[in-house]
Length: 115
Length: 108
Figure (cartoon, rainbow over the protein chains, first blue to last red):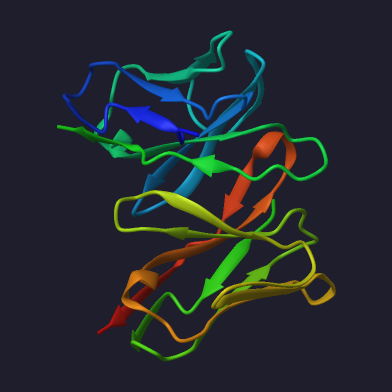
């Protein structure tokens, strides 16, 4: 089975622009969650989607948004980029949250640099 | 909210040595997990261990939920074990609260 695929791998944008990141989960996985990793704040939860519905959102401004398509692929969008948005963005997929425990599988991430 | 603290922040070992990484959490946690982040950035799920002890090859983990800590043991370390080790508590809808990590460097 192919793993979680995130594209692009690297991205350079300038302040004020917007960006869209893509995540293709493992086949059959319906839950997709997103995390931001920075040296200062560490790994922080952005949001989670299950069957096209956002079920949970972390403490991030409204500039961060996402969606999930019927094939479970997910995109996240960041508008009006700021320098502080430079980070590694990680996507994870899982079968579900319900018991029995379903492990999270992470992709390689998208490294975003805002200049 | 739940606080997750890890120690030590950095650890340098010679190949073949053993190590213990610690994770303390502030309150009762659900679904305590350990991850390894490789040099390419990918997070690999090592253990799901809300309580008790589990072993997988040279790695083992123990969680004592009543005392709010978890330990990750690495025996006979190899250079490929290098990277950052995170523990995390999982809340609702797959929301993980991560610790700040332990940077492990294994020297040949």
